[in-house]
Length: 207
Image 1 (spheres, rainbow, N blue to C red):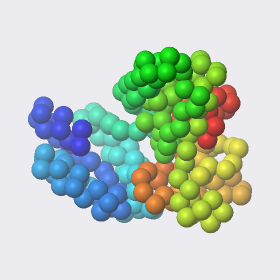
Image 2 (cartoon, rainbow, N blue to C red):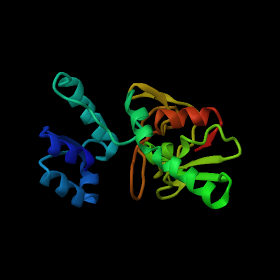
Image 3 (cartoon, rainbow, N blue to C red):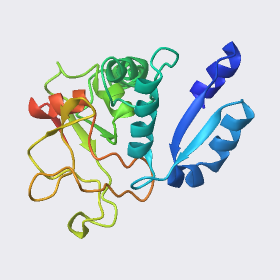
């Protein structure tokens, strides 16, 4: 919606790649984007959700790089996009820090936020990594249950190269990046953004 709005304001062509499943779940936003003049392209590959939409957007971008600017609203993908999204979202953490200091005159004991790609979570966490007394936990979708196989819960210790970066991903027992994430609602990405992976490896954030 934000991208379609800005494109309409400045007269840019806007093409939004969106998983067909997500288009059904977010039909009102799809209608609004079309009203603003955006072309919304349904992506039917794989789970037909955000991961596949990102793939299609990247294919378009690298094919038409001279005339196209790629944009993504989560802390995922190649540099500088995860950093840009983090910086845009850090107002969440800045406000949380300011408000608890005003009300409680101390920092929080615990921060909890959902991690798909992890845009709101990295925005919340970003002002706090140096405050070691503040625990930070990224929560992933349990789906139909951790042992069911229909989950977005990351349970492994390894990482693979995915979309140009080493990152944690859902993988099978052989380490292959072939497991589909499952969430009753929300993002179905198979791995968190690069800064989440770094904070996890440093032991600063539990995911």
